[in-house]
Image (cartoon, rainbow, N blue to C red; front, side, top):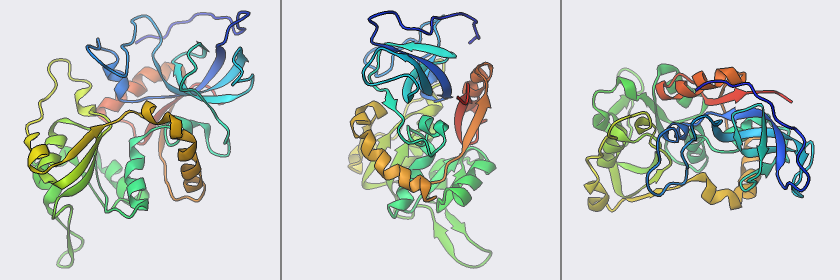
Amino acid sequence: MQVINGTMNLKLQEGSHGIVVKNLYLSCDPYMRSRMTRVEGPNVFTSYSPGSPLTGFGVAKVLDSGHPNFKKGDLIWGTTSWEEYSLITVLEGLFKIEHTDVPLSYYTGILGAVGQLVGQFAKLMGCYVVGSAGSKEKVDLLRNKFGFDEAFNYKEETDLVGALKRSVSSSLFLSVTWYFPEGIDIYFENVGGEMLDAVLLNMKDHGRISVCGQVSQYNILDQPEGVQNLMCLIYKRIHMKGFVVFDYYNIYPKFLDVMLPYIREGKIMYVEDIAEGLESGPAALVGLYSGRNVGKQVVLFARE
């Protein structure tokens, strides 16, 4: 990746139905790594074109518009480019930001899509929640800030299968609890590889797995790791289904109706890791794959 200086016209040509925007915040997301390789076969994402700006979720301000749904001064979120200013001609999946009483950066994560929220949603629905993370700091966040019932550092585990079913002593001779003594009802899959294999062995009969991503596999240049325990899907009659956010854009207003009160009332906690300036973007994105970020990784281009 490299930063290139260039110029563009901030005024639309006559008859254009696109918009010109100033990019404010950009989201760093693990799936972007997979777009840096040639995509073969059906895929919801296309490969990046060498020499062209990266694209991803972001927040921007409209500077000029030829489209009736957007006007100069509107704040929007959706797919934009990693550049200071963008001409956007494909407007499907762009949303006008109507609520500005929360930080604009939230629209790259908490009001768009982010993994740290899943366990908090589950807790609000009455679930017992266990999370895994890659550092002591992140494990503490899951327990103490996000309210997970338990959490463990997967990088310190030599036996993930055992880690999911082992006992945890809350004090030296007193009460003992178990992560999943009877198995896992629901697993939110965003890791893949060894973790998915371990979870499959620990799933309950008729359990459910929602597949959002496979971050452990994105940076593997040769052959992705195989999953060994798929027969568990049959033996345990597990329902495993993938999803992408685009499929649910039609109910985004309903999501806001639920989510915004949670934020305002402090029922959902959120942590961001903000890198400032376009030039800091590549390092911020690369840092995702070693777990360097703490919280949602965002690149701040401009505050206004």
